[in-house]
Length: 107
Image (cartoon, rainbow, N blue to C red; front, top):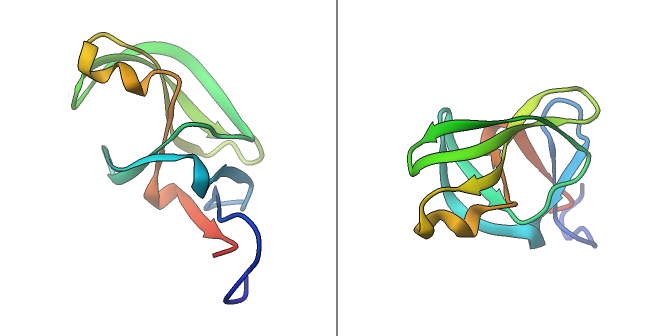
């Protein structure tokens, strides 16, 4: 997109450019994943969820589901279904997308 693009700032799958989230849906940019930095979003679209499973993460055990691009099937991150510690409850229902798996569009 050209400089000064009009419209919402978007995030897309790095592989196929499928729209997966909007800048306005960012909750936190300070997340970490196995492969580096990640962003916590309140909402994502054009995704497929894998099966729910309990996984040990940096902040404790959570029930999560992997998140895949609905177009190309690329693993992009995960969705939090349940947090077992009270301090982590804010993550429930939110989606983490790894920085290196998404690209900015319309910036």
